[in-house]
Image (cartoon, rainbow, N blue to C red; front, side, top):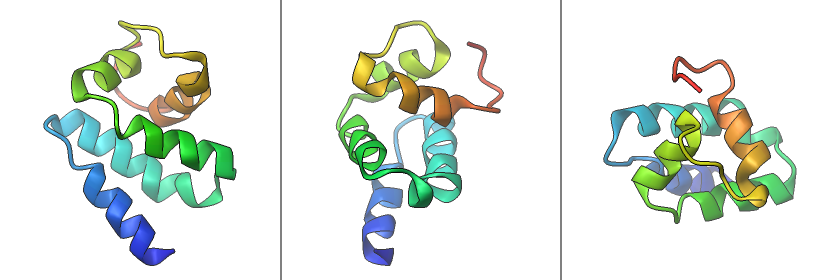
Amino acid sequence: MAADIGKLRWRCRRGMKELDILLTRYIDERYGAAPAEEQQAFQRLLETQDPVIYAYCLGQEGPPEHFAGLIERITANSSLER
């Protein structure tokens, strides 16, 4: 599991510092206790292009239903305007 977390943490290193912070914080605070379906959704989200994830997190673009709850948890208590 620790190796998997390390790989995920590496995949959270994006081209945008804001995304790095949000995604890494999610890994640190929520991923380990998340249900398997949410963990799988997070792994699929990491396959999405940075500008799209950022637009979801800012509320500029509505995420698909299968990412909606995950995006809410990722951005909970963040300083990004929604």
